[in-house]
Amino acid sequence: MNKTKQRVEAFFFTNKGGVRSNNEDGLVIPGTLISDLSMKIPESYSGEVMNALFCVADGIGGEQKGEVAAQLVLTYLQDHFTEITDEESFNSVVYAAKEQLEAYVEKNPEASNLGCTLAGVIIQEEKAHVFNIGDCRVYRINGKFFERITKDHSVVQHLLEEGVITEDEMRYHPRKNIVTSSISGDGIKDSVHIWFKTIGLRDQDQFFICSDGIWECFSQDELEMILQKHPGYAFLDKVLVASLARQSQDNVTAILLSTSLS
Picture 1 (cartoon, rainbow, N blue to C red):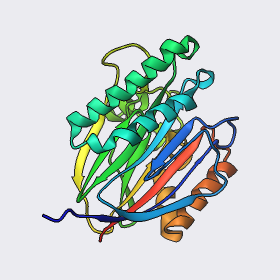
Picture 2: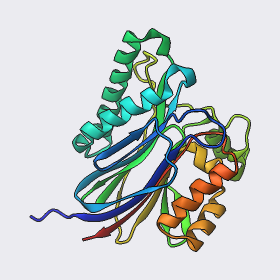
Picture 3: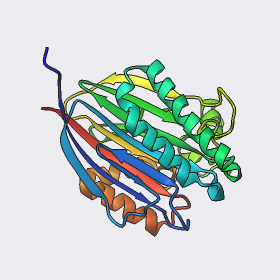
Picture 4: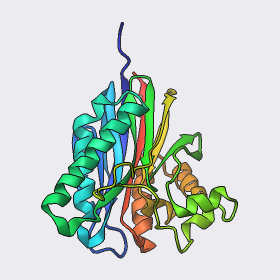
């Protein structure tokens, strides 16, 4: 039986943002891991894939080496994502990545709070495994509309579900940065809450993967408007320029991923 390849195209950037002195975000696209780097312009990737990882990570821990956590977790995912076929195998890889952080903390006790949140898409033939831990996000783009697929693990997500605040109010709420799940070296066995879903890929599907620095900086309407006027590479270029012009309070990282049956 022939295995189905997807033709994929991705545009991506990671940047320290408007006020931070360093970049604790990172990302993975096929063959490349970018961490602890502030990109001035977006870059692009294209190829035919049967199994490929596109992922964004946001390091937490500040002085306690959030960028190290992002790099360790992304490296582990990059090396082991081919083992992932369903939610159970994804959970196993995540907890093995957590063990890498525990081992790092054992050697570097001053980094006891290091960790990261992440979100991404694994393209596997005609399926996409979509996941997140924390408040990085994956949107599926339906025509000109952004549909948030992932569900944040955060205080403001809980307030949204309780009907206390709206989706847009999440961006400004004083507790917007409090996450309720991350991959961290905290020594707690079952501390990671995981969101995972497998969906069928449609021809010409598009996904937008981003760290919380992006969705805090732009409303969903604004992202839709920018994409409508500036498709493809130009969309990410405009998003990067605007996030810096708006003095984004956090690091900013995004991937625009397009797939088509080859």
